[in-house]
Length: 156
Length: 274
Image: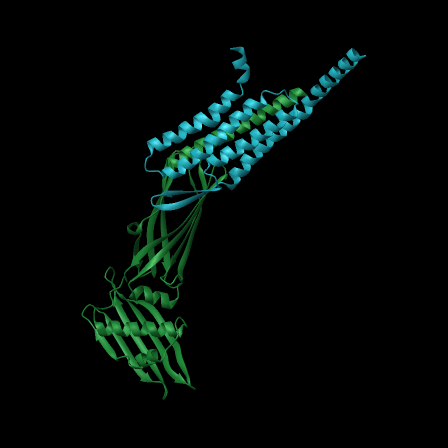
């Protein structure tokens, strides 16, 4: 029981809820409630979201296995940020322009600035993970040097 | 940076990521479910009337915007251009900085006047005479979510056009008017004159036609020189809605001079007469 708890860290649940369950339910709800909308567009979004959300959850789970300051945790967190950006990009339809039909006419929604905002937030997260790695790396270095000292004393 | 500051940084980064992800889902839901939509006018929603005194053709139409989103739609700019079949613009119209508040449905009336004094004479004559299909080219831009999302629409709406003034059902008059229009086209270098054009212009009939309701059409052809003819057309069209009529006069020189064709407008005039 306790082993299971360790395998599924708390970070995984919000990631699963926020990146997979809520958007998937929203998309299915839209599909169900508005059958006149183009199904292909929504299926395409689902095809993007499900794998990227699974990757996000996997990365969240893996990164929690390593302690802060560990290089592997740092790279997994960077991967997490990149994956969330891809996820959001997929949710928007995989492009910077969404075309929708209103009253038989085509309207385009240009999301360039919105994509820039998403990129900025992803960059903010990357900066955080970099700082976290730099700050906590000292702990790992001091622990490993302490271990080395201890091992050296035993050998002596 | 100490660990406490790093924790604060973490909180900010998490909140930002959460806000952006929530906005993405909410916006997607709002837009996909047509919480925001624009109803552009269809062909039958575009009406026009003619004001002979002001010498204006007034186009009336409307478009409505439904905004059930959480943000105002701002900076709505609409640019309209009415073009002829050959894509020659008749007029341009712009309306800017309109706003649709969140939770509201707003209808914008568009009153688009065409000042007949400001369009070219040929266009004027063409509008008065020819059945055609004009196109209303609409270009709409709007900003949503503090300018992060931009809506654009570029549409061409057909506007079937029948002349507001019934010149005459008389085929001779119609042939005369058609000939005049050909002449004007050639005179303004809108088309290339061919030998058959010149022959057909020389063969224009002399017409003098009047009706009881005041309509008059006359086409006089006189010799300007040995090889050049002076064609004068005079049309009076009674107006049904108000007293009076429109008087139209055009005088052209047609023929050959020094071995090359001559098409020259000498006089053009349109005026309202009581």
